Length: 280
Image 1 (cartoon, rainbow, N blue to C red):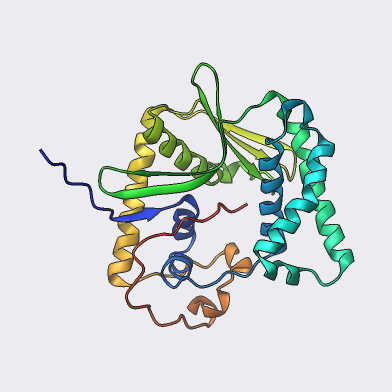
Image 2 (image 1 turned 120 degrees about the horizontal axis):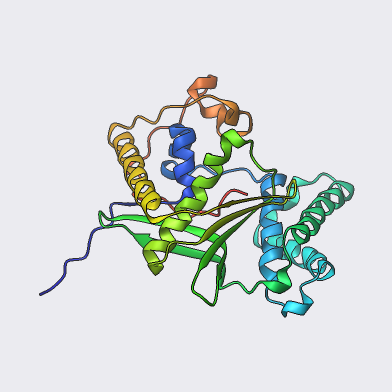
């Protein structure tokens, strides 16, 4: 009997899911209109620090020292600038760049106060993961680090270069990690033993232990979210949701909530959500 493959109905990443939950119009601008986002120093610093921490684990365990991590900073910055020359425009003068690099170096030093990398051997780093659910919805994202113990227990680790959230916003912070936990479970058949968020901005760590029942509920929530996105696509009704995130939104000038006018709805509309790096 020939099996007919399940058709892909769409794809969702934790970043784009969070976009729609925060503001449907922002989701439209990023996913459907595919409007460019301006680089900023905070997000770029996050990308740089993640790159250094990824490369740190290329070294032998005994060589994973603070000095070794600091030595990776400039080469990784040069590599990032080569890939994205527009990043040079972020800094007005050498002094500003030096201060920014020093702030990135401080975050790397903070990492060593939260964990001893010589005692860790990641199974995966900056790993693109992707799984299709039974209804054809594809979940994808990039996991900062996946640790697998000799006993088979899995830990999902995510580095955050900002400060830890207020208790009232922990649920939002854990959304991304639960998303990854669900994908890992569906791919490997093992519910991660621990989700760990490491906040380098204030030397804090948030850990969470999911269970299978919780991930089943979370999967239902993602399906409901995708249904809401599909309804917005069909009706072309992506409404703005004014709030604090507007203060740093790249698209504020185009938002009707702030007197702007969105561009004409593109034809044909985009069919899927492109994978993106998680916000740092």
